[in-house]
Image 1 (spheres, rainbow, N blue to C red):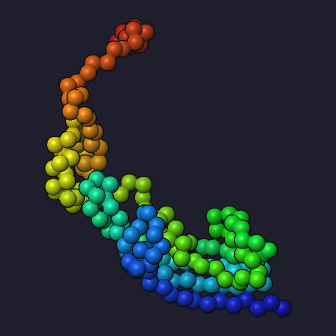
Image 2: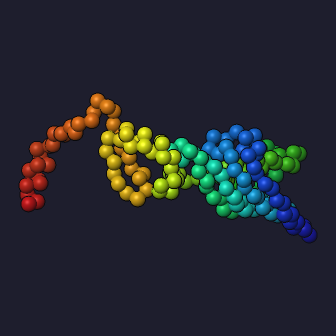
Length: 176
C-alpha cells in the first residue's frame, strides 16, 4: 500500500533572489514562502503560500512603490519520459531527473499578483514628476486618483472642431 508523505519548507526571497532571476516586472522585495510538498504514488503536489512586499515602479511617477503579496498557489508534478507543461499548474518531469527548480515558478506567482495599473495612493506620487506631468497636460480629468491625464503635443493645444455626420444631426433633431 503506497504511503503518502508530506514535507513543509520555508524560504525567504530577497533582493538577491530578484536580481538573480532577472525578471522584468520585479527587481526588489522581501517575500516569505511556505511550501508544503505532498507526495503520492502518482503525483507530487506543491502548495505555496507567499506573503511579503515587492517594490515596483509607479505607472504615474516611476518612483518605486510597495505592493503587498499574499497569495496561495498550487503546482502538480507527474513523472514521465520528457519535460512537458500539461497546463498552468501541471508539469511532467523526466523520471531519471527527479528534481525541479521552482525559482521561476515562485517569480511568476509573485508577478501575477501585480495589478495591470499600479499607482501610488492619491498624494503620494513624486511631487516633481507630478508637476511636470501637469505642465505637459493638455486636459486633465479630475477624479480622486488623478489617474486619467491626457497629453497633447505642443502643436495641437487649441481645440479642433470635428465635423459631424449629417445623418446623425438629423436623428438628433428627432430626439428633441
